[in-house]
Image 1 (cartoon, helix red, strand yellow):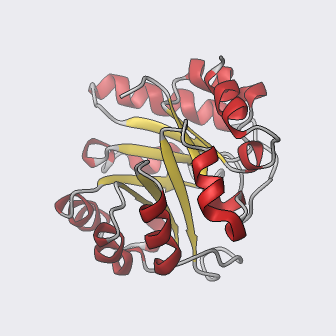
Image 2 (tube, helix red, strand yellow):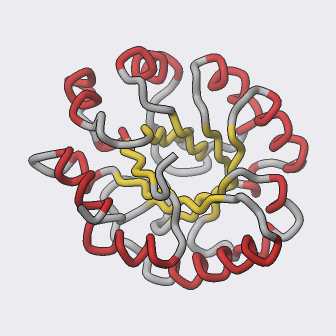
Length: 215
């Protein structure tokens, strides 16, 4: 596994040319799925049929970010569709430890997503059980938003928490990630960079992905 992974968020792709779009991001490490229900966030994204088609068209591992009020209802569905990573917002679940274990029992890596205003201290009792933490660097629900710089302090604090407990937990950042801030994010300790509009809004997707890697 590369030290830093690039996750191409399909939220910004041209769904009318899905096969071509996915082929053009084949140099990424992951495909990021923003699953929105129109309740937890104001937007709706996509569901099972499209995820199934994405899985058919690409060999890249699927990384699902659940922006829904009922994440537990999606575990079996997404596992059956071949999703490898499943993150959810802990405020949407009363029994977080149980849900994390259910995710792992279905063979997926379990992560918790934190919105910009949610402190990393909320992870104190669950961090050892996680495979990764998804730090949102924009408020979730829409693609193309501007990066919120205060996330750097959260990365530093989270990295210190992980190091202090000697945990294999990875840090993922999503929102406003570009080649301009990628190097600083990697230096701060980020392991997975999620990018949507920066990749799919560029003229050359492979070049954009290389730019995120600093190449």
